[in-house]
Length: 277
Image (cartoon, rainbow, N blue to C red; front, side, top):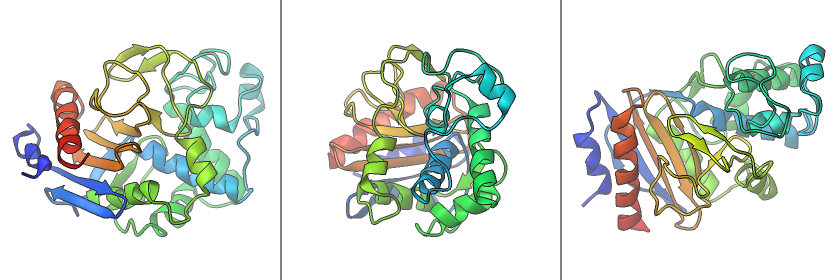
C-alpha cells in the first residue's frame, strides 16, 4: 500500500505528496505538477539562496544588520541570527522584541530583511537570485518567489522533491559543511514559540530549517529522529528530511493549517516511516 494514499481522506480541495530517498522519488500521490502557495516553506528556500551568497562571499554570516537604527536596537545581531530566528527582531515589525541570541522569535520581518541584504550585496533582485542560485540548478522549473522571502513562494511537489533529493544526496549546490551548519542547531538552548504548537524549551532551529529535536507537540511524528529538519507553512504545506531514516517527505495542500493538518501530518509521517524506514 502506498502510504501517501492517506491524502485522499484529507479535508482539502487539493493535495499532493512525494517520498524521497537518497536515490530519488519512492512514492507519489496527487497532481505532483500542481503549483501550491508554499507560505513559510519559502523560508528554507530563501535561506539556501542566502547560504549560496555566503559561499560566493557576497555576504557573511557574521555581518551586522545594515540599518543603523535597527542595529543600534539589536547590537550584535548578524545575518546568522536572522536566519536562525535569534536576532531579537519582532515577528512582523522591524523593531526589537528581545536582545539578540536570548530568545527564538519566529520573524517574517527578519526574512524580509535577509532578502534585502542579499539583493543589496549582489545587485540582483532576491527573487531572481533565488531562481538562479537554487531553482534552476535543481530543475525546480515551476517554482517562483512572488513577493516576500518569508512566505510568498510557489511550487509543486516535483519542485520540492528535487530539493529534498539534493539535501539527502548532495550534488554540489552547497558545500557539505554549509549544509551541516544549516541543519544543526544555531545558537543552542534558546526557548521560544513554535507557531501552531506553543512554547518549546529549547526551540531548536538551524539556518533556515526548523529542527525537531525533542519538541512536543510537533508536526512530524514522535518516531522521526531528533535530527529531522524541515519546515511547514500556514497554507497547508510541509517538508521534512530525516537523515537517520534516509527519507524526505513533501506534502502540499491548499487548505490553511489548523487541526486537520496537526492531526494528519504526524499520521502520514508514521506511515512513511513504516513503509520505507
